Amino acid sequence: MKAVFGGLLLAAVLAAAEAKADPGPDPAPARTSASTATSRFHPAQLWGGIGYYNTSVSVCFFGVCGSSGVGQFGFNGGGSYVFHQFNRDVSALGFGNIALAFGSASSFPITVGGGIRGEHLGPIQLSGLAGLTIAPISGGNGTKVGIGFGVQGNYPIPQVMPNLGVQAALMYHILSDSFSIFTFNAGVSYILPY
Image 1 (cartoon, rainbow, N blue to C red):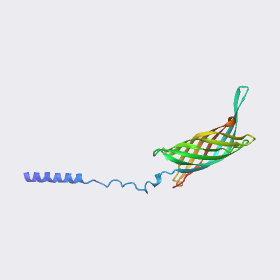
Image 2 (image 1 turned 90 degrees about the vertical axis):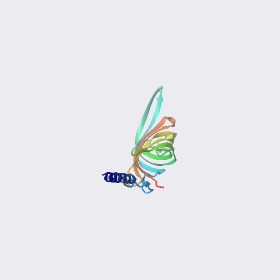
Image 3 (image 1 turned 60 degrees about the vertical axis):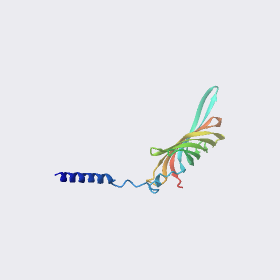
Image 4 (image 1 turned 30 degrees about the vertical axis):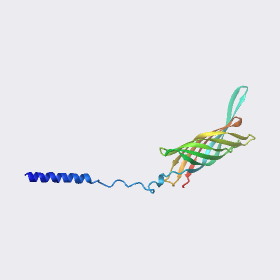
């Protein structure tokens, strides 16, 4: 009886040791460059679209100030380039944008500046932008200079086409001679591959 009990005990110990030594199914394979290709960082981006432009001027008369503006339809195009990545989620960029708005006071705002972009805020990229704006305005108003600031969002749609996205931006330009331009643009963006 002792021999049988000892044999069963020895078999149980050997089975337990064998089960412990077996690592089970193979762990997940290491990520390769092929599996990470879709998430690679791309620094350059282009965009273009249509939008609403409101050009206004503030006027003061005998201490009473008011503002009058005109709404316009326009086109815009531009691009950005990330020159520094703080970490995986935040980047510093330079950008340029050119627009042409049609109306009784047509304008041609050109903005060049910089910003900060959140790379992975949910499914979108969100940028805060600020820059120098030069805006020729028709109707004898001349060229105005000032600062433009705003936000821009990009929603990638790789299921339609790789590197393609839907883009929208709000900007406000404070210009010389009490002029200002508010813009809302929507269109498409394209991330340039390396």
